[in-house]
Structure formats: C-alpha cells, structure tokens
Amino acid sequence: MSGLFITFEGGDGVGKSTQVAKLVELLENSGHSVVTTREPGGTELGVEIRNIVLHHRGDIAPRAEALLYAADRAHHIATFVRPALERGEVVIQDRYFDSSVAYQGAGRVLDGAEIKDISLWATESLIPDLTILLDLDPAAARVRLDAEAKEFDRLENEKQDFHARVRDGFLALAAAEPKRWLVLNAADDRDVIASAIAARVHDLLSA
Image (cartoon, rainbow, N blue to C red; front, top):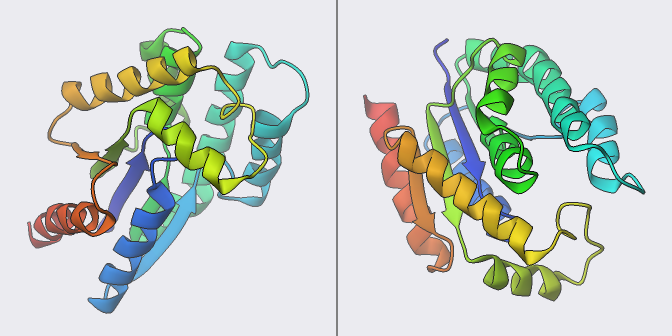
C-alpha cells in the first residue's frame, strides 16, 4: 500500500472532528488526495451498526457490543479503507480498533488483548501509520459535551468512572507503542494542537 493511514482517538468531547477538519484542509492545500471516514458508520452497513451500538434502547451484552464493532470494522476496511490506501490516498479516520480496546476492553472490563486480536483478524492486521490521541480529563470533556446541548448516545451516557477507565486505556495503549502514537493535550489551543499534528504528519510524508 502506498497511501497513509491516520487515525484519531480519544474520549467523547475532546475535539477530534475539529482537528480532522484542520488536517484535511492542510493536506488538500498541499496537493494530497485525502479521504475521511469514521467508525462505526463509515459505510452503509456501518451506519446500521452504528445505530445499534450507539442508539439501541436497552442493554447490549459487552461481548456482543465488541463483536458488532468488529463486524463494522471488517466491512469498512475491506470495502473503503484498503481501496483508498491502494490508490495512494491519505485516509484520515475518526476511531479505529484502539477505541474498541479502550471502550470495550478498559471501559467494559473485557480482555483488551482479545479485543485487539479480533480486530486484527477482522482487518487482516491493518495498523495505522499514525494514531493521534487527544487526551482530556473526562470531567472537562463532559463540560464540552453539555455545552453542545445534544442528545447523548449510549457511551456518552456512561458514568464518570467508565470514562476514566477509557482514558486510562488509551494512555496505556499509547505508552505501549510510542512510535505509532502522538499524544496531545486536548485542553491546549486548537491551533497549537493542529501545528503539532501537522509537524508529525509532515515527517511521515517526508520519510
């Protein structure tokens, strides 16, 4: 594959959408072909799965939830992400398997290694070239979400201790693979964050 695969991770309300938009603008202005996507919901099938995992009324067993995300991921990578990478495009994606390890592993207290193994099988071991973690205290993230005055999904509605475990899960993943991850303080100025991302992406494109 000759493209570049960049993923954004972090809890809800950390500003991923803002930074994705800034990076897309930067790369397109530099002449790169860029596609953006997200998980879950990056394909037609994914939209249906997203509706189930985020808006289903009632409980979903933790293992069932993890498998639904993996099913979305398998289809999404095979039909959208890999073809784009093979065309030489830069793929910028909001969430990938690291979210499953953090949310269903640390958050739901399942085995994170098992969840990662399922995702690697589902995606034929596609690993991002760069994973950007926007890290923010869950209480501060909640303030941002409340300010949006929107209806919360199933995960956003989880209690503070759940989101604290998710944050710890992300930080543990980043510490285990420092070469793949770029960890940034999401409380910093948006332009400061964007500059740090731009510098790391420039290094990758120049390698």
